[in-house]
Length: 560
Image (cartoon, rainbow, N blue to C red; front, side, top):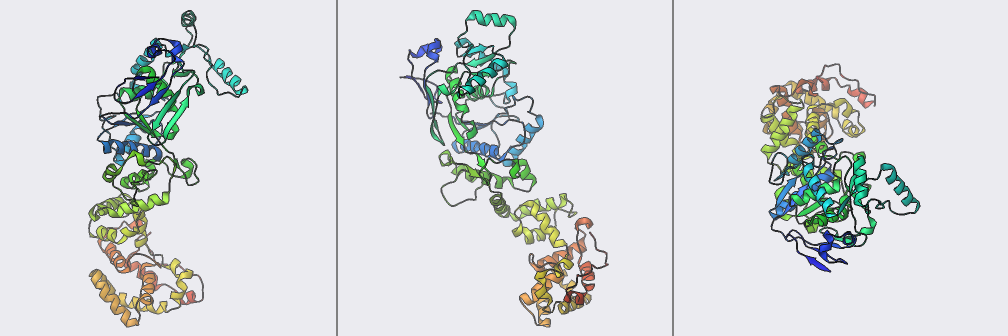
């Protein structure tokens, strides 16, 4: 057993049958050793998020990015963004732009990467091919890699034979011991070849994972693997290792599905003489049925949630809690608070279930925690953009947001809430079974008195004075009918709003009156003005209702 001195990013221990220096010069030494990656001692924390631009940013990837960001910020380190676009057929500029946009929307600003630059660029793998070729050739010269001239047919045959023998489908090493003469003969014929890494026959890789603890792999479970394809394109595990090493990445925080890749990458680190980073493999995000979260379970991309009306701060808060907690009962965190509280040691290694109901609730908490001015601006602009109102600010918008905000969990809920406020579904409500007790408790008589109050102008005058005017009027109206409480307000709500339930009735009717006067509501929004409501109310056939006959719709033209 011997200790090898390395750069301060990591400590690596190795054992050989032969002296350590033979590892670099003797093929025999290449076939037996143990690599152990221990915690790095480093002054510079550098982490990276390395997505492939082949689709939208999945919430699982977003959480990985978030954990990297929080770790870097909490340690005063650097958060690097690297685009892994070596899959030329599937990688697109549109997907890359979408990834960058979604990360920015979440507030996860990167210190180095596309659009920012840095001292370790380029930050797209497609622009780093010369670097991969350089290190592949270095491994070829050192003997850690050899040229493999096997055809696809030969490789398939090896797999079939291994399958029949019930062995793992690993490469048998046909070209591992080829002579220089044999290799030169194939090169002379122009035979295509790959670069294969020599995997030691004996030994193991041991990693002290920051989340999972000690994880180990025996080398005999892995055959010699390809690092460069016959077309000159580098393979994923080789690219990632070279990139992480040459970008001085100190900690690799990634999804647990990458855990098996660690064996190949660890061997490449050792062969190139690079210090290994510390690894942390985060659990998968699961669907409610405990399967891997996928499109069949509904929205899974950050962009989709943004379009649905979720706030970035709510998404960040919820994603952080999928596998992490600060040890208290608190579930409400801002991004700055997460940076202050986050530790990788508190990340759970078991899978976390994505609960869309919990996310919606959390979004509502964040929405209502916004300063009223900011919330009003956000909702007002939303209403104008979808064509409900003509202006995004003013007293109507302010009062509507103040009235409706407590029932809104998503920005898009505000659309429904305002549309409900402006609509008047009197006929559907009157024929509802829930209305029957109110109907039998003198609703037609109350309607008659209400029509009289409207015709006299007293109701309009009260609404014009705002909430105080309404309070005075409704108190007087109740006295005249000798009604109060539910016996007064339930029938009034049905007759004035056309609904059995809703926000404060007085504030609602003041807004309906204002909407009819100021012209802020778009005619096509389904708004029914106060005047039109009373036209419809006047047409109700109360006797037919009492006989349980369907109510005939009014012939009065109502804007739709």
